[in-house]
Image 1 (tube, rainbow, N blue to C red):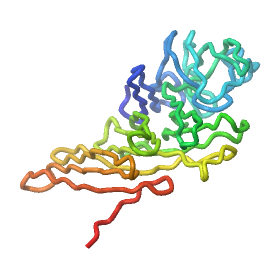
Image 2: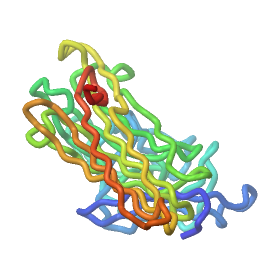
Image 3: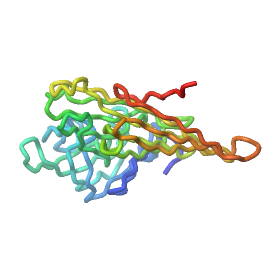
Image 4: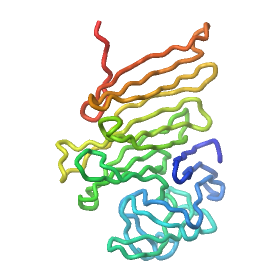
Length: 283
């Protein structure tokens, strides 16, 4: 996998990596892009994705697939091609349409992701759908869909710039259960391949008044920067006080002073309106 312009999404089940790296703009084969094999179970990364009759964006649309819809890869096209500002493969996939019928057709690779969550993210008792994928300019895009709302009015999103000096990096995402944190959160961790800086970002989805008829906002609740640049190492251990909706971060810094001592800094944050606000110590 090329060190430049890289994004990977790591899952525990299944263990799949999603990545893409720039190549020669005149040679799609020079790009380093994730490839999926027959049998891979993936999900639609965008809402209302067009399933095509043939591997061509001008051919007939067989079905429109909602964000988060599961698909099974049947075949991958032999050559990478450019479609607008993206380079990827076309894939023959099998899915269910809006009526529940099994349909087959072709999707461009950038419409697929291995990472999807179906959780009650805003605490209203109903589940939302969330996906994590990559934009054409290599930002991490987290989308949240309210299935009850009309198409074109039901998806909120947030873009994160991957950690590191340049574009690209690697990412893993996990769900933080409200039974642990007091609120539902998505934790996105970005660790670039060729840079020492990384981050942990906690994201929330907030709907004022838990209004079932309103689309909420995806918010970056807290971001903690880490570093591995020997001898300097900066890490964060995060814990929660569920009932008080508090987050405690213990920052460990090694190799910063000549004495070589490890310094630990404890910070406490209070949840308020979708973000964690640091509590200042009283003097």
